[in-house]
Image 1 (cartoon, rainbow, N blue to C red):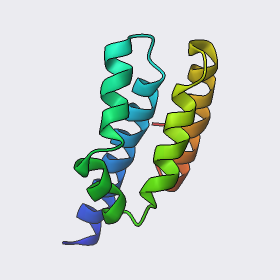
Image 2: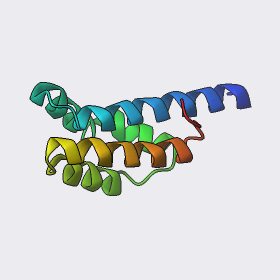
Image 3: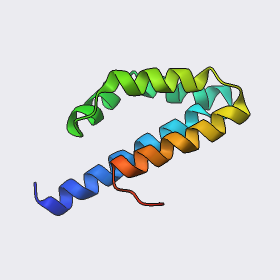
Image 4: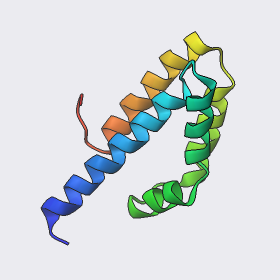
Length: 93
Protein backbone atom coordinates (compact mmCIF):
# COMPACT_ATOMS: atom_id res chain seq x y z
CA UNK A 1 0.00 0.00 0.00
CA UNK A 2 1.47 3.38 -0.95
CA UNK A 3 1.89 6.26 1.53
CA UNK A 4 -1.00 8.29 0.11
CA UNK A 5 -3.41 5.37 0.57
CA UNK A 6 -2.20 4.83 4.15
CA UNK A 7 -2.81 8.51 4.95
CA UNK A 8 -6.28 8.48 3.37
CA UNK A 9 -7.21 5.33 5.31
CA UNK A 10 -6.02 6.88 8.57
CA UNK A 11 -8.09 10.01 7.91
CA UNK A 12 -11.15 7.89 7.12
CA UNK A 13 -10.65 5.83 10.29
CA UNK A 14 -10.37 9.04 12.30
CA UNK A 15 -13.58 10.43 10.85
CA UNK A 16 -15.39 7.17 11.67
CA UNK A 17 -14.23 7.31 15.30
CA UNK A 18 -15.09 11.00 15.57
CA UNK A 19 -18.65 10.42 14.32
CA UNK A 20 -19.11 7.41 16.58
CA UNK A 21 -18.09 9.51 19.61
CA UNK A 22 -20.61 12.17 18.62
CA UNK A 23 -23.26 9.49 18.16
CA UNK A 24 -22.68 8.23 21.70
CA UNK A 25 -23.61 11.73 22.89
CA UNK A 26 -26.78 11.78 20.79
CA UNK A 27 -30.13 12.57 22.42
CA UNK A 28 -31.62 9.70 20.44
CA UNK A 29 -31.20 6.53 22.54
CA UNK A 30 -31.16 4.29 19.45
CA UNK A 31 -28.28 6.26 17.89
CA UNK A 32 -26.40 6.36 21.17
CA UNK A 33 -26.80 2.63 21.80
CA UNK A 34 -25.74 1.74 18.25
CA UNK A 35 -22.60 3.85 18.67
CA UNK A 36 -21.81 2.16 21.97
CA UNK A 37 -22.11 -1.22 20.29
CA UNK A 38 -19.67 -0.08 17.60
CA UNK A 39 -17.00 0.55 20.23
CA UNK A 40 -17.14 -3.09 21.35
CA UNK A 41 -17.35 -4.52 17.82
CA UNK A 42 -14.77 -6.44 15.82
CA UNK A 43 -14.75 -3.60 13.28
CA UNK A 44 -13.61 -1.14 15.96
CA UNK A 45 -11.00 -3.59 17.23
CA UNK A 46 -9.62 -3.92 13.71
CA UNK A 47 -9.55 -0.14 13.29
CA UNK A 48 -7.58 0.15 16.54
CA UNK A 49 -5.14 -2.58 15.49
CA UNK A 50 -4.65 -0.90 12.12
CA UNK A 51 -3.83 2.40 13.82
CA UNK A 52 -1.87 1.06 16.83
CA UNK A 53 -4.49 2.23 19.35
CA UNK A 54 -5.27 0.50 22.64
CA UNK A 55 -8.94 -0.41 22.41
CA UNK A 56 -9.64 -0.76 26.14
CA UNK A 57 -8.87 2.86 27.03
CA UNK A 58 -11.18 4.22 24.37
CA UNK A 59 -13.99 1.84 25.31
CA UNK A 60 -13.75 2.86 28.98
CA UNK A 61 -13.75 6.57 28.05
CA UNK A 62 -16.79 6.15 25.80
CA UNK A 63 -18.68 4.16 28.43
CA UNK A 64 -17.95 6.89 30.96
CA UNK A 65 -19.04 9.55 28.46
CA UNK A 66 -22.34 7.71 28.10
CA UNK A 67 -23.01 7.96 31.84
CA UNK A 68 -23.18 11.78 31.74
CA UNK A 69 -26.33 13.87 31.14
CA UNK A 70 -26.94 14.85 27.51
CA UNK A 71 -25.65 18.45 27.73
CA UNK A 72 -22.47 17.35 29.47
CA UNK A 73 -22.10 14.51 26.95
CA UNK A 74 -22.11 16.95 24.04
CA UNK A 75 -19.30 19.04 25.54
CA UNK A 76 -17.22 16.00 26.49
CA UNK A 77 -17.81 14.40 23.09
CA UNK A 78 -16.41 17.50 21.38
CA UNK A 79 -13.38 17.41 23.70
CA UNK A 80 -12.81 13.77 22.75
CA UNK A 81 -13.26 14.63 19.05
CA UNK A 82 -10.44 17.17 19.37
CA UNK A 83 -8.19 14.39 20.65
CA UNK A 84 -9.28 12.14 17.78
CA UNK A 85 -8.55 14.95 15.31
CA UNK A 86 -5.10 15.39 16.80
CA UNK A 87 -4.27 11.68 16.75
CA UNK A 88 -5.52 11.10 13.20
CA UNK A 89 -4.14 14.44 11.92
CA UNK A 90 -7.59 15.61 10.87
CA UNK A 91 -7.25 19.30 11.60
CA UNK A 92 -10.71 20.83 11.96
CA UNK A 93 -12.58 18.73 9.41
